[in-house]
Length: 234
Image (cartoon, rainbow, N blue to C red; front, side):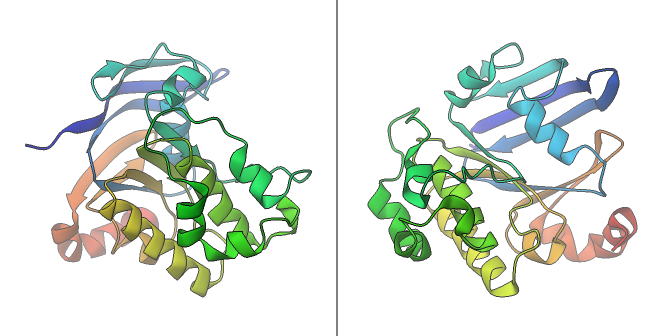
């Protein structure tokens, strides 16, 4: 039987006075890849941020492997085994690529070693001594993901990792997602690039106006494409 890694029920979130999530409901099973789809402003990034406690106020329920996390501080949520890779990547310009990689603390056993990370991302080993912001966009994105793999996180929240990158780099990131899934990682992706996300996810959740309005599986995708294009405006 599938084990629930993440269960979100009735999640509301605010930025100041702005009410951005209006009762989000979904779950993610251990080892599953789930993609949040929707137009800009639908609430996808806010959902990831709310899971991590990075919005203003929030209410509802967020259970991580059965532990209620709605009232926990962000650093306590991370210790439940969640790694968040934000859209802006957060690479420190004053640190080398390797210093950026080593910066986050280990939060749990079982994180990847530097050697394992360099085996997965050979470019990062070649650029280990380079200043963080002198890396290409693709290398910075790889570094942002690699950094959370060291921490021991087993649930990865990846926000728009393919955005603005060359097709050859996007293909490498797709291979990375496949490899991580094979290693038992659980992944929630926010993606605007549907062609990137389509072959990778086990399930797709469509968001609109701060709610999940549709859910379907990889096998249901061909039958849903036309309706999906209407939702996404693609």
